[in-house]
Amino acid sequence: MEEAVVGAVVGASVQILLQNLLSIPEQEINLFQGFKKGLKKLQNSFLMIQDFLDDAEMQQVTNKAVKRWLKKLEAVAYDADDVLDELNYKVLRRKIKKSNKKVQTFFSRSNSVAFRRKMAQKIKNINEKLELINQEATGFGLQMRFAGAHAPNAGSNTADGRETDSYTADPIVLGREDDVSGIVEMLITSPAEQVLSIL
Image 1 (cartoon, helix red, strand yellow):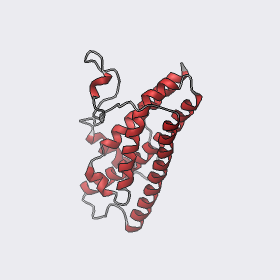
Image 2 (tube, helix red, strand yellow):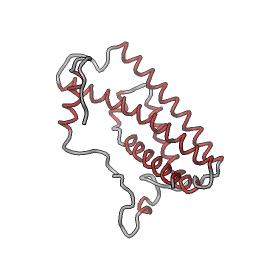
Image 3 (cartoon, rainbow, N blue to C red):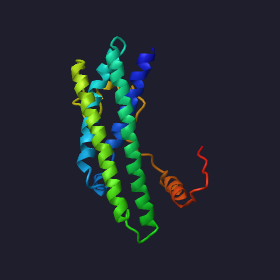
Image 4 (cartoon, rainbow, N blue to C red):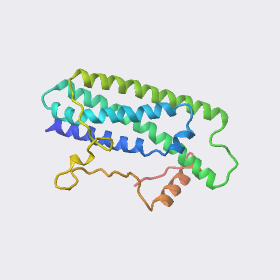
């Protein structure tokens, strides 16, 4: 039972991360010159891994190595999610500063270079880990089963026209822009000593 839960959690984590990666608008990726190729490679790596997930989830019950592979994949997926959170924070911060019509640039010159270098290195490390994970999947004999939005028959995971999973194809939630902007503004403008409670 525990094995099935691990596989389902990893599968859901990778699916959500992949949706978030694929939903990054091209203009936002262009803001982060210097690691645009790395982000594209990250998207492609997770697309490939997603194809192995169904087979891995079935094999993990009997194959301990596949279970360890899924745990590694989960850790890398969380690392990639952290990087996406940092990127999204920078984009939101830029939008707020722009809407406040501050004459500041997106980053100061030195912060911009340091941020790009840091993010490029993080993305490079994640991509290297994903390459190893893909190689291990092939070594375990995992079969690629096309799943997700890039599959030849994307409707194959439904039965009688009913959805069989809980994720949505569109991760964008409408009507909360003001709330998000308000929270980000509060975080940016509050003094460093102030403690903000989150419900």
